[in-house]
Image (tube, rainbow, N blue to C red; front, side):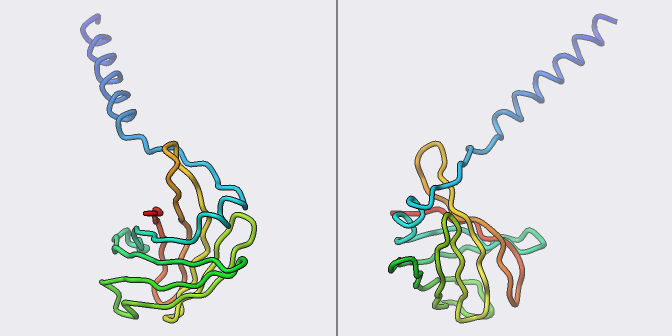
Amino acid sequence: MLRRILSTFTILLTTGLLLSACQTTKHVAASADEVTAQISGNWKGYFINKKGRRYPLSFQLKNNNGQITGTGHIPSSSHDKTPSLTGSIHLNKVKWTTSSNFTFDLHMSKDEAGAYHLSGPVTGPNHGRLEATKLN
């Protein structure tokens, strides 16, 4: 009986240690002021389709009084490898549409190290999700 209890305890302890090692960094929502100040720049990440497949991408964004413009680089796209985009900022949300008819409905967050992230659903010819990190 004691052996069974120790075996169960060892399994639970090992599982707990493995799960704690796999935890992701916590993100907090960026404020509206942070979004306005930080949206301009280079972003790199992934489009993740509804089947979970990840496609690398990058965006160069500019903010002009709450109006977003920019270009993307999506090497594996079958729609448009270098789409242009236009959109806007509303509080801490960022929304843009590309020249290839994709709509990105995103929110910005900041991790514990101070890095900024954009994430949210993408609709259009292929539905999925964007996960991107600001490079500069």
